[in-house]
Amino acid sequence: MSRSAHPAGPRHADVLPDPHPLAVPDDVNLLDPAIWPSSARRVNGVLELGGTPVPALADRHGTPALFLDEEDLRTRARAYRAVDGVDVYYAGKAFLCTTLARWIAQEGLGLDVCTGGELAVARAAGFPAARIAVHGNNKSSAELEQAVAAGVGRIVVDSFQEIDRLARTAARAGVRQAVLVRVTVGVEAHTHEFIATAHEDQKFGFSLRDGDAARAVGEVLAAESLQLRGLHSHIGSQIFETSGFEVAAHRLVALAASLRDGLGLEIPELNLGGGLGIAYVHGDDPETPKQILERLLGIVERECAAMRLPAPRIAVEPGRALVGPSAVTVYEVGTVKDVRLDGGAVRRYVSVDGGMSDNIRTALYDADYTCALAGRSSEAPPALSRVVGKHCESGDIVVRDVWLPSDVRPGDLLAVAATGAYCRSMASNYNYVPRPPVVSVRDGQDTVLLRRETDDDLLRLDQGLTR
Image (tube, rainbow, N blue to C red; front, side, top):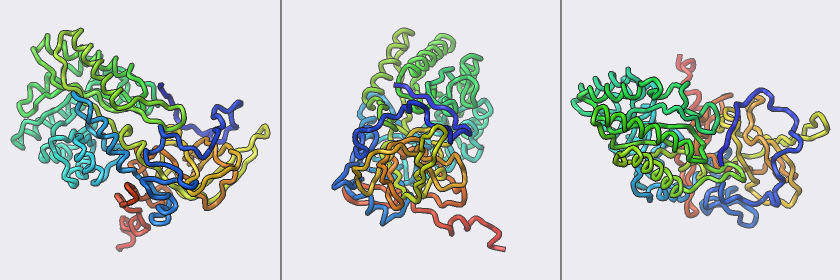
């Protein structure tokens, strides 16, 4: 199954389409196991995560708050690690903190970072440098120096200027830095325009069409302080099918064959990037890690056999697919408002105490989510609702359309599923709202990974208070 989305435009208050595509659920209290963390269950009507009732978690940590199921994430990491012949790098941009980095290291995965800040977190966590890959289309000289000094295992080069900059940096350090060349393969995955990253008109990588990729390989080979380890491609995000990967692999292998024929060069590694999708709403049906990785292995092996090439080592970079399903954001309802629309339809607005400052994805990508009452179950008939935030912005929408019990009221707790990726990591202080905490849950225990910001944290940067 593939999914597409469209930019969030200004018409957020349009009337409901007729008929509305969101089917009425048989039971609004049910939790779809494809969407929620493995530990999520109702006990006497109350949602539990990691063996702890959500109301107890909310009492201890406040709302909004993200609760991350440690065992759920570790289980997903093990499932990726279990497939032979594939190196797995967790894409830290999805969500990163020192504790999570340690979990990833303990499970035997690598780590993909794309800024000096992410590298600093990895180093503070003691993550093995040899298992770190560094991405980014505009790495600064300082970031390259930090990466080389740390001894990272891979740097993915993205421009001719960067190849020259990195070569000089590595030479000064007296090391031979392993690199991958990022190739723009001209494949656009069926996803949102803003997160489809391998078609030609975008900022990442070296173009195959213009011959830049082959020229970049030549410049890396000419630099004595650089060691070419392979080729890299990334075709988008939230991808549910492998057809795009198949085309990308075909083109990468064809490039590898041309490099063999022209330079006698063997490419030892192909990194196919990340972008593997997860279930956000009922009906989303992503493949298991075993299914997707074995399919990718088969694709590369077939392409290499057709070109009479030895099969290279394969690498992938799941981020969302690892951490996305493992976390849930819990909010408290503040107001419930029914608004009559043209034609007589009524839209129910359920306002919560967070919003676009802790989850920008609905506004930015028109992303879909599902949510459920967390503090109780309800036998009330369902009402089509829109969950919105507290920000002074009409596009501040958390869940665009969801069936909730019609007796939702102020003080209720709402849990939004699949918020582990790109929610806390993209969070802001819009309207000077402090960012929420991230709390791990496991076996009835809860541990703060990132504490809640305070007003003092926000004011600490304000130099007007120090004069």
